Structures are given as structure tokens and as C-alpha cells.
Length: 93
Image (cartoon, rainbow, N blue to C red):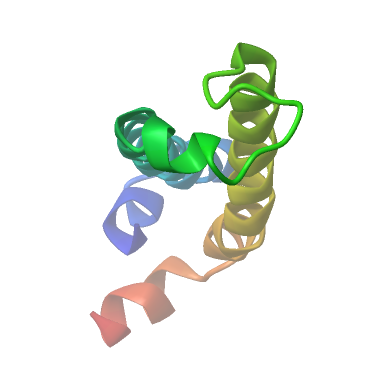
């Protein structure tokens, strides 16, 4: 990031870079979690009352909630990365 900033990248570009990487990892985690939960539906159905183990509305809300939490959690480090002096970042690398 220090090299990108030293070459003239704007803070918005750095912010987008970090948030896009976070979104990619969040999507991969949600996909793996969804696949795992669908594989475990028989076991999950014994723990749920008045709800099907494959309720699509629940899956959508949980996925959206987790994606929102992940993006909020990654915003602060991304914002800090835009405030770093490029010379200081290059010296530490």
C-alpha cells in the first residue's frame, strides 16, 4: 500500500482495495459456511423447533448480517491505511 500511495493512489483507491479484499474473503467464508450448514441439515433439524433446517429466509438474513459485520469490522483498518504517510509505510516494509 505504501508503494501505491507513493505512486499517487488516492485514499479512496486504497480504501476500496482493502474493502474489496475483505468482501472477497467474506464471500468465500459465507459460501463455505453455507455449504457446511446444508451438509449438516439432518443434524441441525433435531435442534430446531418450528423452523425448517433449510429455511431460505434465515440463510439470507444471517448471510447479510455476517457480511455487514465483516465490512464494518474491516472499514476501520481500511480507513487507517488511507491515513498512513507513504514514506513511513515504505520504511517499515
